[in-house]
Image 1: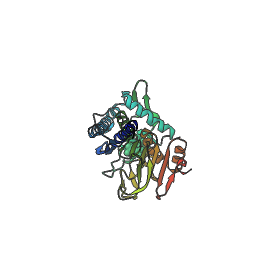
Image 2 (image 1 turned 90 degrees about the vertical axis):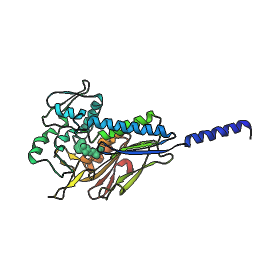
Image 3 (image 1 turned 90 degrees about the horizontal axis):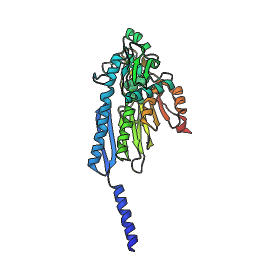
Image 4 (image 1 turned 120 degrees about the vertical axis):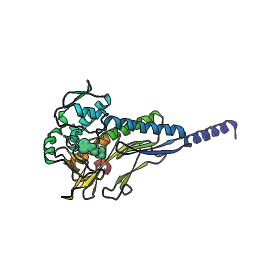
Length: 327
Ligand code: AMP
Ligand code: MG
């Protein structure tokens, strides 16, 4: 072999070894009341560990900001004061509330972070629901049009004395998106981050797509998968009525954590909604929105959003797809 060819071959072998060198690094922790998992490909174990630690730290930071039950959180401060006077908020919370209001308007109020005005009276562990007078008093406070956001001034005020906000339908998607930004900054190109039902994917699984499963809503556990999708470089969010629920002793009704803002009660008709799209910051609120809108209206909404698709499992177990997945 000529010297220059030998040199070229050596270079290719070196390049190949460099690209292939590495392994998967995984971790999962319980944060934000859910399971946060990170899986990434890296050639350097120390840097991989530092990247995973940075993601977990970001998840803890977001939990500390917006956990409504922590007296030190920004959201707690807002809920405690915004009915009396405008409360100064961070630019980050301004962005989150803007996004939430966008989905409220798009859905005619199916998505509404002020659901918590009534939602705060549910205790799924204890199996308790709001008293009739609590519901009557707090239901008018679920109204996104009474969330007074001054984006320029970064101020938030409530137009109803019983209003409370909760970001449980949107903060995990935001956190996943932030995690992917952190990994991109560290030049990681193959990774999956999930927080409960919200997943963000960077690249593929090295030559193969990631397989993302949709749980059988009435299966014994998450290992019982109804269907799986091959995805790469996309976000994926599932909202299901099996996440937090109890069965009411009276009517055998499933009381769960996704609230229909017009009734203050659990949204019925659908058992699971998965939304695929470019960003978890959108697929997260969208999956909750579609769950509340129901089958027909939910699919119609997704069909009008370019780049987004949905898979819905109804209460009879029938699977429905948005038109982008069947055409
Ligand atoms: P997800 O699992 O993303 O569908 O979000 C469910 C969470 O969203 C619940 O646990 C609540 O914190 C919150 N949520 C429930 N109902 C609504 C609603 N109608 N609009 C906005 N957020 C909601
Ligand atoms: Mg969601």
